[in-house]
Image (cartoon, rainbow, N blue to C red; front, top):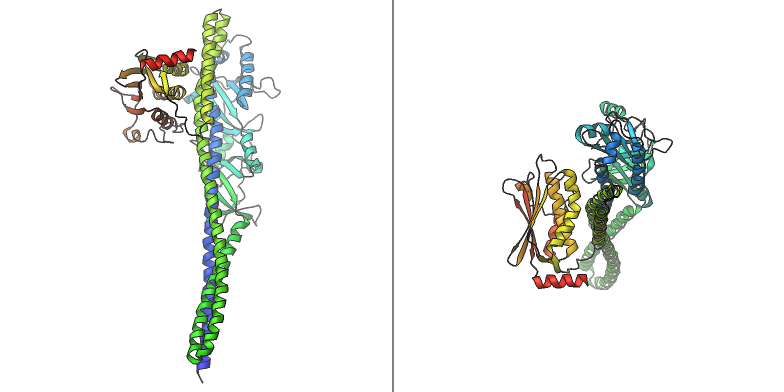
Length: 605
């Protein structure tokens, strides 16, 4: 008589335990699916930040060489001297207007030591800068004190935000300033429908895809920091109010306005090259995350229910077997049919899971492509640095040519024009290398005269060496040839010469020397400087991509140079120079004299 109540109690307990198991399984599966979806979004956000950071840093580096080149212009120095000839300032203003239009700079202007502007690219405009005093600006004070400066601020005349780059002219004759505006970068962010903004070390938004977020703060400012900002007139009378970002769970934020924010999003940030700025992205949490969570919960409930159902049926079948064996056999067939039906449902669910796995693999391939594009952005920035040097040399040759023509030295002017043509061909070669970055190297190897390699590389580096006052000596065995690609090997020598000039730039007495010698079947080309040398800890990493000892370097030049030399069958190494300094050695396969003469004959034909 007591068996029935015990059986009923056991069934109720089994139902309760089964329900608890399904709820727990659904909750665990939902959390796992949500974390997986958020991890995918985080990887996508990191890839996007890498691309955007590289593009912004490349845009900034495109303008960094301009103030340095203008600071060495003799006509700008003449305009800053007391008792300058009439009309000099007007000619300088006209030239600055042409340069600003060609480079995309917002404005370029020249300031005397007392802070008064004497020439500007907008001198002919109603609100031009000529006659205005900028002695209060930190970028002016830093340039006069230390040689260079920079500042992100609102223009006191235009009211437009921009990045100011400054450089001292001569022996404290004055300062030349270039202002960069980032409207094009922000427009690209908006066109891509991406929520992106950049902050300075204080957390103030300098640029953003949403223009309403400009000059707002990511975190509260203390009274001292706000007083410094107001004193420097960095951002005018902008209120610097807080961004509408509210912390949420699992590192997420809610984006909204007022006391009831909404729009859950993923906030990520990354550095902008070697600047103190950081770039941030807001990735909205789409409905797809909730959908994946619901699907995972449904699958977990189905799987748990099937398991519980199977266990219940098995226990019931065992109980019925004890009492009625015949009836149990018939019901066993029915049970097998039901299990088969549930198995088909589970197989269908497994099929959907496999489809989701394939979709995630596709997303992984897309993220890998994004990573390659980020590397392309970094390489493009390095190539822009390489092109700036021939451009500076072309500018110097062009200015000297005009002066030579005025003095009637036609033959010297013709030689300068020929040098400009060769530098233009070099720039074309560099841009062709950038275009072919995504492809494998051609692997072309042919006899290349070493004299031609030295002539092309020195033509690019000589202008800077002369401007810096650095002696550049060459000791070379004549009529040597090596096996390789002429344009790519010339790029290696230019990079080594530029690195050597950088190393001795701050030395009181400096010298850069190039030597070439034949050693059996090999030819060694060495570039030596008497700079501070390379620390022992850094020497083992000097050829690794993105490793650099320079404050404004990308760390790609030596890595690319070693790759080029090895493709040509050679080797690139570094060692300490006797007495101090550094020696970079390029060792290449020597070409037979007959091969070299045949190559020169074919070229002349």
